[in-house]
Image (cartoon, rainbow, N blue to C red):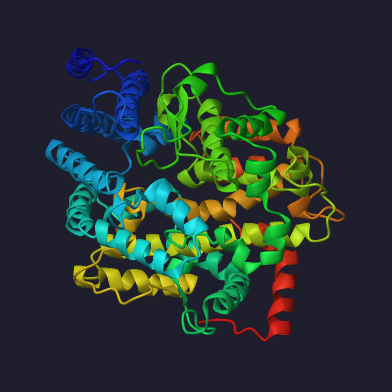
Length: 597
């Protein structure tokens, strides 16, 4: 949909309250869909640099939507009070979803727009240059790729410090952002904005639940951490990586140390050399980014899920052609099946994963498109994040990798440990990273720690949950290291990724059971469950996604698992990695590797 300033202004002028109880939600759906289109188009322009991004127009739309929502929710509150007993469950859920969250004034909405634009510009527009005649780097994808491929400690140390120094000015902007959001949250009766965010997942006692889930997998993570630290100490020396202390964060193959699979060549050099999937993809198979995208689409299609429309391929940005920084994003344009991806991809297993992840979002968009606009979302945000990741477990099975031509034999005796170790390096550190990030944010949002302690608190939590430390002292008055992560800058809640980390494995286990492979029982271990071509699994997944947010997440999970489970659990993760846990324990005992920090 082409944006017309005149058309937008006309729409904002004609927004009026819908009269009568019967059709109030019909009116809300019509208006909400239009607002969604406007926001989607302006956001796409901002992310891609296409067209002329108009911050003032974005602010005007934000203010109008806030005013419109406040008026509608006031009407709905009156309706609920007057006709409480005659309102059905569907309308009650619409009311809950539509009216929950903070209540902004027009001025606060404008302040939010300005602050977010400043924060995003600081992240997206920053470039690091090491010196004259040397390349300059954006964070995503340039620094990401540097950390993935470099084993030069001096280079990694420079990049690690330089990026965090560059984003440190975000600190006062973040402080202002939290203040504005907290006022809006208290307008609606919440203690702070963190309480609003937690409510979205509809999981009472969420902080305690995620802490317990992570405690369940801590023994497995601690063994993985010990083995990784042992290998890093051998490569870089005990003076750089102590065999008993937290691991320096710059040596883990990732700009944020949130996943560690890029250092497979350090952790398991023989296996990494024997199964160099990136090299096979790039050099032997000569896949392009488009090839990767088509193969990702094919996996979903094999399960009976829809192909991408032509406009997806014409509108998506899969490669970085203008040197612009980009964070992988799936966009629902809310306009006649217009769905898009923004990526700066290159042929690699990491970007192959991201493509499946983003296509998972788009499959969800397509599945719930016939729901009312209020219900055009996932059961909760963790559900949205876990679709593509659940499918990716199926992609990374020996059978499918052989089908893709990335390995020569699915029966190679070394293959299982390679795949499980690579997966664990990717998945397990992310759980601790996400928990640390969101616990830090909850504390700062609740004003339980003075600003002078923010950076110290960040590293305390990173050490507690991930066993890592900064490579140098980080003085609180000078630094704001959380801003090195896009989701802090973009004000995106992160606990969804932690919950999603457990949920995705439950989903994969359920898909395996629906595919009739009986992955949870002998003789087929879960990590070998190949769901490619399983239309039975795809049909159940599609029907669950088609519910959108019209049902509580526990109902959706219960449907997917054939009535066996309606709670988030760690059991599937522990089942999946059971062979790896045995292997790690053997290595630790054989090599007398210290565990813990």
